[in-house]
Image 1 (cartoon, rainbow, N blue to C red):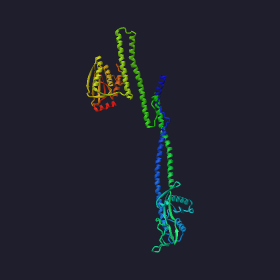
Image 2: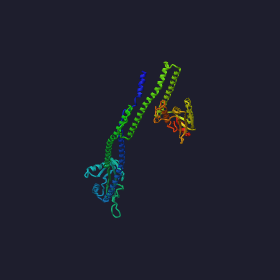
Image 3: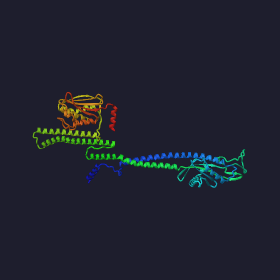
Image 4: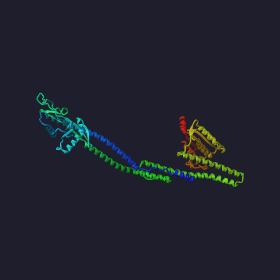
Length: 556
C-alpha cells in the first residue's frame, strides 16, 4: 500500500503544471477593454473641459446681454420720469397705464433680455406684474410672473444693479433688478417750486426716497416700481446638452469601431500564438520539425525563429546524446568483455601455466584501469555539460600557476618513467594566477599529456608562459611524434573521435570542455620540425583587487 501511494505521488509530480484560473480572457478582450477604458476617460475629460468652458461662456454672455439691456432700460426710465411732474393730476392707475404704454411703445428698450415691470409692497407682501400682460402674450406673462415670484421669494429685489441667478424648474435664470420711485418734496401740502417757477420732480431711479407723494395737494401712496431684466439660459444649456449627447454618441461609435479594430488587430496575433503553441506541443512530443509559414507579429516571428533554433539545437543534442550513448556503451563494453573473458578463463582453469594466469590478471587490471579512466572522463564531461546548461556550478578558487605546474609534473612523471620517456620543462610564469577548479584543470592538462605520451618517440616538452598582452597564460605541451593526421585534425576534439592508437576518444574532448568552462580554449597543430603541439590558454588574474572581488564572490 505504501509503495502504491509513493508511486501515485511521483506520478502526480511528473504531471505538467497547469493554470488553475477559472476565467481565461482572450487577448482580444484585453485590447478591447483597454480601448474602452481609454475612450471613456477621454470622453469624460473632454466633457468636463467643455462644460467648464461653456458655463463660463454662458455666464459672460448673459452678463454682457444684461449690461446692454440695463443701459437701454436706464434711458427709458429717465425718459419716463421726466414726463411725470408734481402738478400731474393723473391717478396712480393712470400713471401705471402710462408707464406700461411707454414700455410697449419705447424704441430704446433692447431685445437682449426680457423685461418685467412689477410693483411690490413689503408690508402686505403683494406684488403686481404690470408688464408683460396676458393681452400681450399669455406664455410670456406667465413666465414673467414665475420669475418675479421666485425673485421675491429669494428677496432678490433687495439687491440692485447686480447680476443674480435663480433656478426655475431646472432652468438657470440670470437677472438684475432696477428700482425707481416717483418722489417729490412736499411742504405742508404745497408743491415746492424752483426759482424758475418749475415744480421739483423726483430724482433718477437710482435714488431711493419716500413713496409718500403730494400731488396737487392730494396724498397719493405710490408703490415701489421695479424692473426685472432677466435671461433664461435654457437655450445655452440645451446646446451644451446637445454637445454632450453628440460626444456620447461619438464615444459609442468609437467603442464599436474599437471592437472591430481589436478583432482585426488581434486575430493575426491569436492565429500566430496558436500556431506556436501547436509547435511547442510537437516539440514536447519529440517532433522537432521547424515551424513553417508567415507569422504577422514581429515579436512572435522572432519567438518562432528562436523556437526553430531551439528545435534544431534539441535535435542536434538528441543526435549527440544517442551517439554518445552508443559510443560510450561500445567503449565500456570492450574492456568489460575483456575483463569477463579473462575472469572466466581464470575461474574455469583455462590458463594452465602461471605465466598465462599472470598475463590474464594483468589484462584484467589494465582493462579495469582503462574502464575506470573512461568512467571518470564521462562523469567529468557530463559535469561540464551540466555547468554550461546552468544545472551545475563548478566550484572555483584562485590558483597559483607555479603550483599547478609543479603538481602536473609530479602526476605525470611516473608514466613517463614507466614508458622510458622524458619531460622537458620550461616555466616562465611567476606570480600568475587563474580562477578555476584545480582538479578539473589538472585533468585537462593530464589528458593532453597522456595523448602526447602515447605518440611521442623520446620526450614531451612542457612550457608555461604568458602571452604578449599578459592577459592569458599558455600551457604548451608538444611531442616529437608523427604529428596529427589530416583526417583526424578536423575532428580532433569531438567526442569519441580517435586516432590510430587512440583509446576511447574522450580525453581531448574533455580537455576542451574544461578549458571553455574556465573561459579559455585549447588549440592543436603540427610543428614545423615534426610532432604535435597543444596549447591550453586560460585568462589570467593579476591585480589584487580582482583577486579580492573573486574571493568575495566565491564566498557569497
